[in-house]
Image 1 (tube, helix red, strand yellow):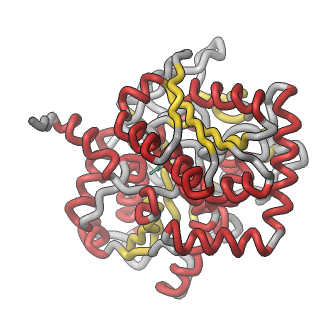
Image 2 (cartoon, rainbow, N blue to C red):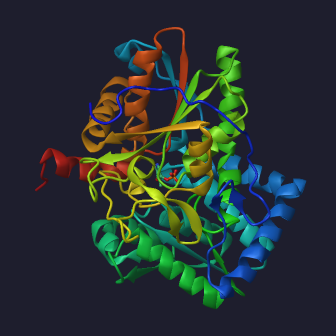
Length: 412
Ligand SMILES: *Cc1c(COP(=O)(O)O)cnc(C)c1O
């Protein structure tokens, strides 16, 4: 094991789960965008607030979640893994069983229904590994939106299967040749497109990041995860869990699970970032461990940057955690102590991946494997008669080729 082996429970100070009028959670968040996007963000915020108060919007969303996405997802007691680990009882929130294989669709369904209410005809999105692109292309097909997805050309090359998937769904993938040709550059291009097309177009941001109201909106759509988990654990255990664990890319699956538990101070909340190869610059995405507060892509938050403020390169075995900034709401709970953050490296995530495959017959996404690895450490430390809920944010089918590559397996 490497990094912070000791599992300290977070110390909580001040609860507040709504951003202020300008979109700040404490000192984090805001709306750092060009003038041409401010109007669009106001329009979006108003539309979202109205929809969120409207029972008919929720009724429609619940129906889609049930009949199309496959919700509620089960809360599964992983007894074989728990026995093998020999500590606390481990439950898995099975977001991997959603349509398209991860939690991302909870958000894209919500935003597609909202875009339809707003009379938009076209969706755009950014994608790194392609998961959010596929989830957006899926709802675009379902609701008849035109759809363009921006993707760094380096990612297009690495994720050709997901590019083809999006094409099958009727979406145009637009490779971005700027900068490092990865997710960060794709977000910049999507924002640029949006600033010129706001009349007809909604930008479906994929995580709890970016300018206000995106962090609030994405967290709200994803909070269905935590609402279900809360009911399910109460039904199964007759009490709340001692701890909840989720991996953190931008923060949408973590905020989605944690949000309904924020004021349950006896539930410890743990966010797990990508420790990559090491905590040296360029070899990880552990923003809370070595990042500094700065502004990136519309939001003030923890950012991996060098002394001159240049954005650092990142690395993780899991593409979904491989990003240099983190959602502002998580930054706020980091500073207030409500959520404890840690990191798990590539190797430990791979071990957890294999352990879950072998013990439970579940192939997790490599992102989720980071949460599993931390859950294993935590369960050992907590010991029997304690209960831990981990978010299994996605399935590992998409990662099978990457795992084969790491293991040196080749196919003829
Ligand atoms: C995208 C992704 C993540 C990371 O994104 P968050 O917004 O931090 O949840 C985690 N797990 C899976 C399976 C993903 O596809």
